[in-house]
Length: 99
Image (cartoon, rainbow, N blue to C red; front, side, top):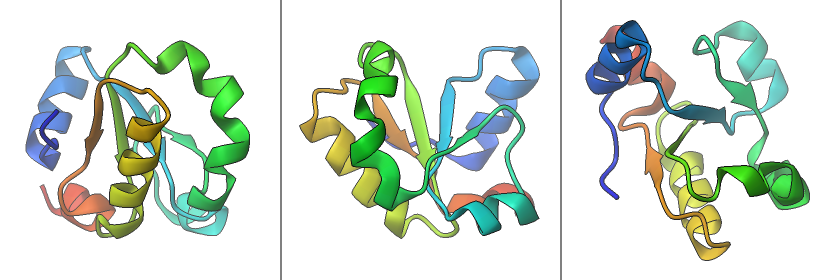
């Protein structure tokens, strides 16, 4: 699955068709700024949360971090765990805030 641009994500949110959004930044980063409707699961905690995320394996999931590095790791990890439709937010939170 191709990654998603901030513009596409904002359009989907406005249309009410936003995918599941997981913020893999640290909790303190999420507290400073967050994408509406996202859930915060820091990258280091992702392996321990797999059971909670089991229902999302067939759904579209967007992962994001500050600039795209940690979320690229999260996308690779989730894909390895059988998630079929994981997309990385291109440019991360920095790009989202400027879009």
